Length: 426
Length: 175
Image (cartoon, rainbow over all chains, first blue to last red; front, side):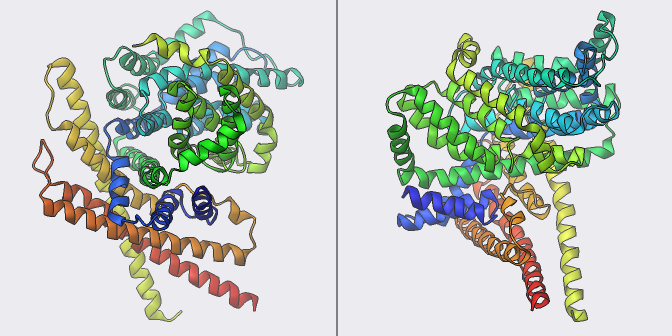
């Protein structure tokens, strides 16, 4: 049955059938093989996977992100990062990483972050004589922090589909996100050190930081509102997300006056398109999951993994990471998470592994998958912005991928880095 | 191509354009409504200490409509996540064949969605299942599923015909 499942799912995907439809067809195949086929049931489960109040956080986080990009909010984040770390040699590189981390704390979508950071910083870096391929690779790699640092759309998805606290997942991503950011800056440091043409740009001025912070103050309040609201249990992630929509709308339209009402239609339609793509896969995965569970596929997969790793959770996590990295190379974060999450979580539970820890590791892993060729959403966006080919960026991006994987194994084998913060809240 | 077919094709494309425009406006409106519904409830709950009974169901219904209608826009704009790297490694003819096979599988999936969706929505209507806080029958909420699938089916058939023509041209060109 495991073979039937893998062949049909990956067969349909390899034939370039969009993943949502491939999942529905896999449900069809499994249903026919098990003689339990019912179209109405398939559609009922499809609805069940979409009909959820917590999932509503996804369109709201996407909408907030769209508003921020169109409304001049991203610009202010970049200026603030520039004032903080822009004065050293190759400073714009560090600005890229820091701004990505800040913007990840404001928006929930990695791809929106990539296009925001990339389209603001890449042209400047190119003009200043930075290595274009390295710069493109850097901004692509930096924005992998988007799904790791809260708020995060994949964490909302995993929380809902795997029945894990979204809030704990959010908080659990903070330290891994910082570790990843530091690792990327280390790679950049060595890149700059070897090359003489990177000059010191300007001087650090405390006044400058204060001024930029004052200018960005209203923007920097957004992560405070979102995180503060959900950590202290004042608001659910969905409520925090809708508040950030209204807040950024007011900021963009009335305070910065950079979002014109006539641009709103485009902003709304973009949000709906992003939402539909993600949630249709979510519904289809829920639908397929029904047949996957009925066919005992998680148990079959568990046997394979148990044989590989014995009783040791460390070996288990090792094989999980390898498997997920491989899947992440060829599949996007969202479908990979929605397919693998429900299958792997029960197995992890058998090892007594904390689901929050496991979920964060999965998401860190699949976020690296966003920049691993041949398939990586961030990679494609970075190509679009830099007008470089996937091959050109791929060549420049491998050191970032390697440190990303190192960071992944650090957080995997020091679970404290993930669990310490979520354990502090009730 | 004979003039009548060209004319037919043009009118089909016009229909597609009109569908997209209507959908864009509809989903934008629904998204605004969903945001306002959830936001107003936040305000009521935290500042006026009152919960609105219907907000959760209504916003969930809006989400369902947004996702399914958005999926149609996504289908027209070719947004849906898929693995098309494989196409870059194929020769033009093989590529066109794979695209055509994928088209047919998508049509099969959509037919299931239309059939299963109508079955489920009509079932729900017949059982008279109504939302708890508002007088909206669930059947009408679910109706958006098969209707969207039908709209996507229309698109998918258009695309398939185009892909068949493209394959034909390739085969004739090669012969």
